[in-house]
Image (cartoon, rainbow, N blue to C red; front, side, top):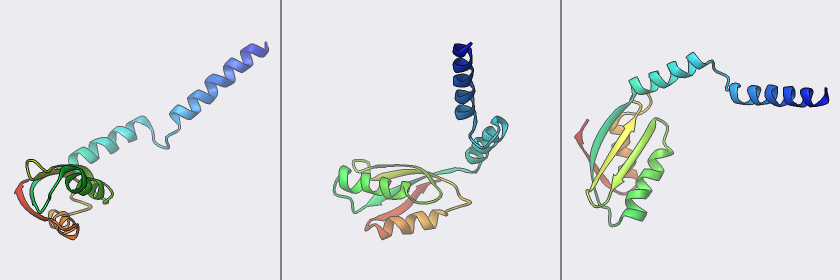
Length: 111
């Protein structure tokens, strides 16, 4: 009998921990779809970088900490950055200004 209670409590606890995200499954799907629909991708030409590790990776690290930036991939070799962002939270102009504040020049290639 004691074993049944232990198993029951284990499953109950597991269910509560896994299923308790604060949102129903349909709300989670709606949030993901909303983010996907409201995201935009741009490509920027970046000048002023001298390396991948400190410059390009540094741009990505700083941009990812910025509200509205979903994804950032900067290449020193290609002198470009591909950025996915939420235009409801940040504009292309604000992204370019941020990169300028980091000490680099950015110009819109596509998006």
